[in-house]
Length: 427
Ligand SMILES: NC(=O)c1ccc[n+]([C@@H]2O[C@H](COP(=O)([O-])OP(=O)(O)OC[C@H]3O[C@@H](n4cnc5c(N)ncnc54)[C@H](OP(=O)(O)O)[C@@H]3O)[C@@H](O)[C@H]2O)c1
Image 1 (cartoon, helix red, strand yellow):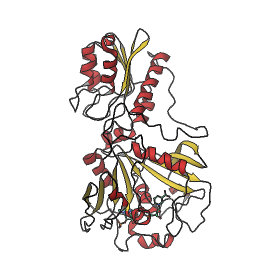
Image 2 (cartoon, rainbow, N blue to C red; image 1 turned 45 degrees about the vertical axis):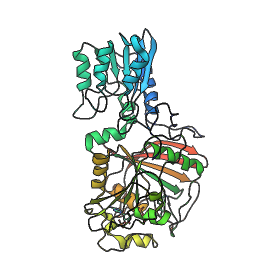
Image 3 (tube, rainbow, N blue to C red; image 1 turned 120 degrees about the horizontal axis):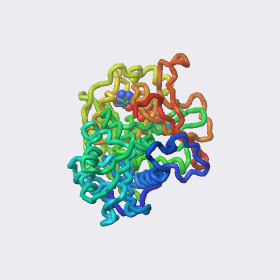
Image 4 (cartoon, helix red, strand yellow; image 1 turned 180 degrees about the vertical axis):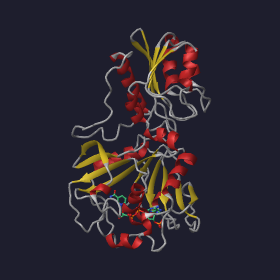
């Protein structure tokens, strides 16, 4: 296992922040000041969002939150959520402020908690410190908690104002919000492709389509994810380790998950030989073969997928003749929705990064389980015989096309990174 998370560690940079070209970010702009709020309020919340970013790799499964305490126009304390079991953002800010917290205004990117979890309620700590006003960006989406922290503050006579800059606050914690409201993680599909949308040669060769800058950026997304999900096809073709290889990373290693209906994961697979937990998800009928002592390995049985596009193996193999897919004619794969529910509920997964081939990516897209595509596009053409981005049979008319919306586009070395949201995603 990697070192336990350290609160004093150097935070990782936001994926893609080292980009050469300017970002075409279309999201996250702050709204104009609303009635009752000043530009100063918004500026303080912007500081909270920047602080929250510092906890994005270590706070999970808790949301990444930032807090600022202001007294007489000056910041007297600030903080961000520490790893689980350690203080939340508000407590860090209160500690820094000390006696100056009395009468201060608290800016916080997320509703202060009101429950006893691994730490005490932050709302009680703010009341005890004697703060005068709390400006919050968004309510806690947990239906069991939502609004209670704010109610507690109001009951104690503290002025509470918000929500303010809610869209920006929500964009900080899409996984936590989706897990709390839907019992599912936020699913981001990472795909390296050529300019003509091809992800591997017909032979299966795909390493490496993109350059080192793009691959370094992927490491940042891995680092902030609770789990990395792949398919057995990719494991058999590429034997990836799927671990985080960043020297500065001290967060918990993401769970590596293999969708493997028939227990084909070899005991010698690289992902079993590097530190960190591995979850093999298969059908009840599968042989649970690859027991290993080299890594924390677990097998979970899942129901078969209903109406799976994988069941049409013959058609898939006609576009991917050397596919590593099993030959079973009744092969439907595992129920991917059940897998994601399992990851959210039993493993508290907020954000999941899928790094798989066209078959699993296609099945997830087909099932409406993907929230975001993270595409690394190389300036190269692989030709029509190479493999597609996603196996999505049955699309015959433009009206059936899967609508997306671009979030941002940046250059990474010679490659281009496109983030696109799947339209109508619920978060
Ligand atoms: N360019 C990139 O970013 C990138 C990334 C990863 C991989 N690749 C390339 O992709 C190729 C492998 O692609 P692939 O499509 O064969 O493999 P894949 O998508 O990684 O894995 C597909 C396998 O997952 C299993 N699975 C279990 N449940 C499933 C379900 N409900 N739906 C779909 N699949 C399910 C199936 O095998 P069982 O039926 O045996 O369970 C299926 O054959 C390789 O050439 C690799 O190099 C490219």
